[in-house]
Length: 515
Length: 91
Image (cartoon, rainbow over all chains, first blue to last red; front, side, top):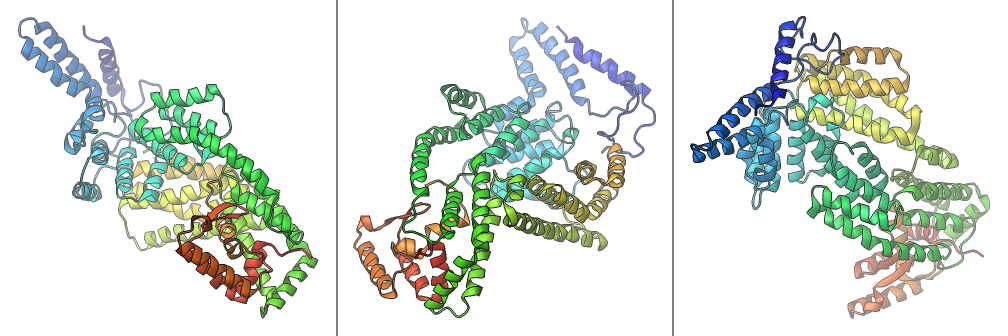
């Protein structure tokens, strides 16, 4: 009746504990560093309390079952109680959180030692309470305020995935979507041992739902592909993205419906499914109408303005996705022809003079700035790649350089603010610190593919000294090792891409320390 | 009309000439006349006066949008830029 597996684990843990030598030099246990020694000699890296709970729990269950015929009521009560002890997260997720019971959810999450084996205790209970709050009906301002105050209290427990997810849920409840998204995105940059699967799943689902609501199908497809092993929802969102990107057949439609049934959040996702199938006919009709409209302008226009304006309208009409890159290139090339055409510029200036404009050349130049601004804004849309910018002629080069300048200025400002704070020895709540670091990471990440290696090199040079010094500071002085480790992880990745061998070596050494 | 949200879309959709349904060659008197006519039709609740077609799809006229369009075209500098966006007519 007794499962042999916990006993084997127990013996294995005892052997490892006896063999433990040269553990971490600090009091806090470190994981995620470079592995050394064989499996029996390595310091124990994960909490194993859940094994003891299971072991003792199974003994109690066995005793209750043996005693069942003699005292059925007592045995049944013991079995019920043991279900709570042995499967607390199932209880929390299936009953307590949907009912909006914050405190019982938090207690159950604290007992869920297996589910939160990398991030148990305060993080687990905060996340469960935040999720229960999100499900709570009626007024929840007071509870939200109370939970926010509890999360803001100084804590000896380092910030990890679950607590970051709890902050994100609270931000979402408070309507701060940007902060919620930034925090959920940041969970991906943490070491897998620095957060619970529950937090990573929640983050993946939130990000995919966000991409679906923005109709950013390329991003949704990429995220779904990355999270397929983490959550069933990724299969649904992957099928939905494929549908919107043109893979439309009876089989694809069936696939979307099938994964909608299997994935969690059916009620929330129902609208997405309905919109996908309703949009099909409407989109086909719109494409037909657009195809007619594209060749028609209300009146005949001076060339080469005519082609530039038509391609500008076509770019504005093209939905985000694979077609935008081509439309953007065509638009940039057409406007470049206008900017190079002296005859049409002179005609425009003549018209300006006829209208009584004092400096028509200046107004024409202002018009050019508006065109460039539109192209720069459209270059940020999903579907425009680095190649589209480089193939967009001189205007493409201008837009790439303009976007890079804007991002670099922002990165310089943000990393400068962190540096100034470090120099003044000022501290902010660790979650705010993490939001700032995650924002810098996300800004580089979002622009890196679009703006290319030269941008990555400049961005890395701009931030890496200040950000790594700050990460070292929070690692050493604040003992917030999991998030410092995450910062070193992405800095190492960009050091490699930027070709900075010295920095890469330093970050690898820092990563080898673990967290 | 597709559901993209860009500055270019708004710029082409709400061009004053497009809103008023006039070519860029329209005289100030024509602009005033057309504007007043549309305002009167909208005030009378004439549904046919609200929709208008633009290079980026259908738009909906409102009294505020019509008034804004007339106002924009009274200023020569603004009118010049709007004419460029509406497309200078070929000779």
